Amino acid sequence: MTDIQPFLIGGAWAHGEGTPFDSLNPATGDINGTIAGASAADVDRAVRTAKAAQADPAWRDMLPHRRAAILRRIADRIESDAESLARRQMRENGKRLAECREQAAGAAAAYRYFAGLCEVMPSEVAPSRGPHLSMVVYEPYGVVAAITPWNSPLTLEAQKVAAALAAGNAVVLKPSEFTPTPALRVAELALEAGLPPGILNVVTGLGGETGAALVAHPDVRLISFTGGTATGKAIAREAAGRMAAVALELGGKSPHIVCADADLDKALDGVLHGMFTSSGQSCIAGSRLFVERAIFDGFVARLVARTRALKVGAPDAPDTDVAPLSSFIHRDKVASMVEMARADGAQVLAGGTRPDDAGLAKGAYFLPTILGGLDNTARICQLEVFGPVLCVLPFDDEPDLVAQANGTAFGLAAGIWTGSMPKAWRLARALEAGTVWINTYKELSVSVPFGGVKESGSGREKGFWGLRTYQEPKTVMWGLA
Ligand code: NAD
Image (tube, rainbow, N blue to C red; front, side, top):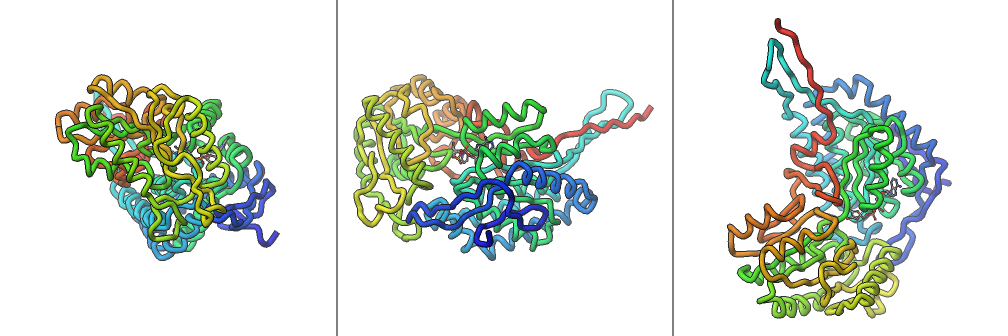
């Protein structure tokens, strides 16, 4: 029992009664450790602990500048621990160390940003339509369940937890079973920073066991979920049964557009960056590339050459461009989707297999892959692969482009490379996406709202909106007659 990593409820470590599971290093196949699983009874205890802690005046009535001070101290501690947090994440999801370091810094930045917002977010006095004073105040939900995926746990968890705490909630966080421990370490740092015990609880476990119990708990009033669209739909259905609120950050199949009038060198860099960083395991990966037909062959030829030259290697090797996928199961799923595309008639222009380098044989590696010869209705152009697989598609004119780009169930992000400002503006307004990048791609900032339309989700995180997501407006009307 002692070598099992416990989880955290009410500031105390718990081994729980759920199914324990192993955390694997996808770069080597080694076991990082065994993690305790939270059962439905453990989840119930976590939620009841969070509910009591949230209702305690010590937290509920804490003045905003004092709450902000705690969030800033959490940010300080994350910064002091950043290298170890980054390496912890890298061991669990195989992401390049340089990206993990950026994400540890991003986590600290999220706590600082929401500390700032916590101090300045106003209540409102609404225009009166009679002899009364109409006020709008913003109340916390109470207990927020935060459920996260494995691709970027440090930042994704920080942007949920920091915002939910700034808004006055208590949180029960369930990290992915593939990346269970960064959340545990951050919660430990939060306790050291003075966050009252019970305000941030972390329950580790499998989605169908621990996650499902959390979603079903009657005292969870908001479920903030980031993950796959199928899981998000199941969570939304469950939440609807008791009218619990949901904020859903789901999958994507984002169009990345290169017009003939673009700076093609910069566009080429942007397409590679937008697709193959994080080994393509990014909800906003620009995984459908639309190139104007007049330049299609030349641009794709350059892209294929650059893709073949990308260095596939260990996540902590400084010259690695593309690290392993997050797990062996996921690598096999990506490989099977490439096989499906081949069966549908795709031409494999680059990659398409595991690397044959013997030094990489023990890890969950897959070559950066480009597929051509299909149209936008092909299964591989419609389904999220969440791996290093790019589909290239030509377009003829703006109406054709917009119809193809919007022709998926998703609507998370889009990118446009063009020298024409009016064209960029027209396209940005016409594309169905939560974020549109123009002459850049995959730029993220905690100060702007992020989220999707259509089956990419509902609700927004980050920015001013990111705090309001964790609050409910309440109208208070004073009679003046
Ligand atoms: P996933 O949906 O399989 O799992 C996400 C989380 O949900 C995990 O913690 C998992 O344990 C939990 N879970 C699974 N089944 C559950 C259930 N029945 N009830 C409650 N919880 C359950 O997703 P994943 O494979 O971990 O992550 C990849 C997906 O996440 C991709 O689709 C990607 O696009 C998406 N994603 C979206 C964003 C965004 O901001 N939109 C960001 C990152 C990742």
